[in-house]
Image 1 (spheres, rainbow, N blue to C red):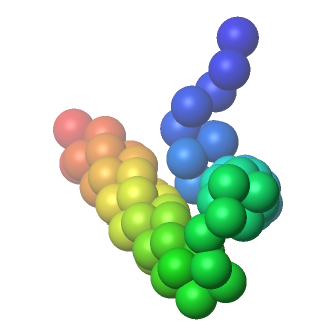
Image 2 (cartoon, rainbow, N blue to C red):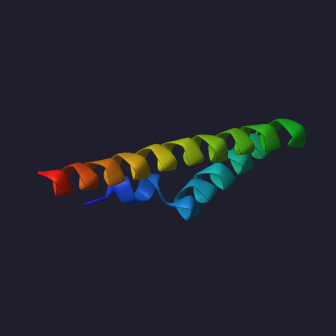
Length: 67
């Protein structure tokens, strides 16, 4: 079974996703500037998702310690 929490916080996984999408864009004729901007947007979204999940996991652990 896929551990989505681990995947969504993995920089390697997000880099692979961005590389795949950029390659598909270039394959279908997108200019390099557009592909670069979309790749950057994907990696930025990965940072936000990863940070949010990491903080929620840390908050949950702290809440569990207080009980």
